[in-house]
Image (cartoon, rainbow, N blue to C red; front, side, top):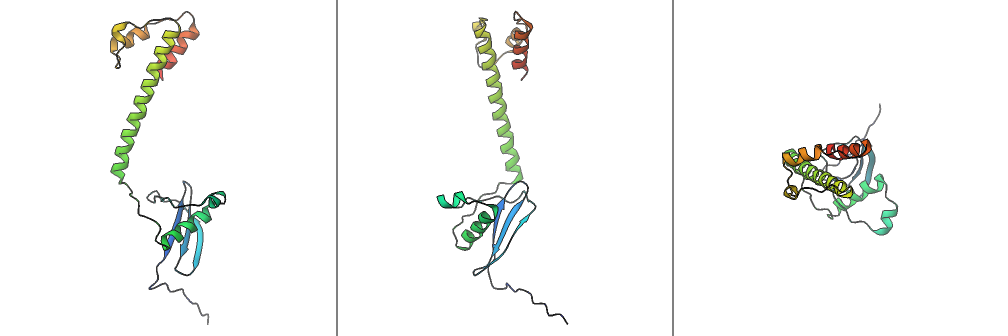
Length: 162
């Protein structure tokens, strides 16, 4: 007859440190007295990492195993603070704002490149079209501009279409 003993953790606190990466999680499981297991696991997008205090010497020897062990130890010692994990709706709203900000930035860069290119080649922008928001009339004016060579036209169209 085989005698199998099972570990009993009743009445004990378990501390789990997770070092989160895109392709895997490094996990370290501790109790008050022992380190029980360190392993890797497929990622779960609902887990969000917390910042932990690190000494300069520790930064030179950072590995996933060391990071997850440090997280578990900091949790056990009460040195970690909870973090706010936004809901899916909040994340999607933030994404909408972020993409809008990026699109406005790209549009401003394109506008500035077009103005700079026209200025460089001596094409003066009509003073009634120097506004921040470009009217459809002004956009048509830009589309009708013809440079002296096909390469100049190509550059202007590339900037305009980006």
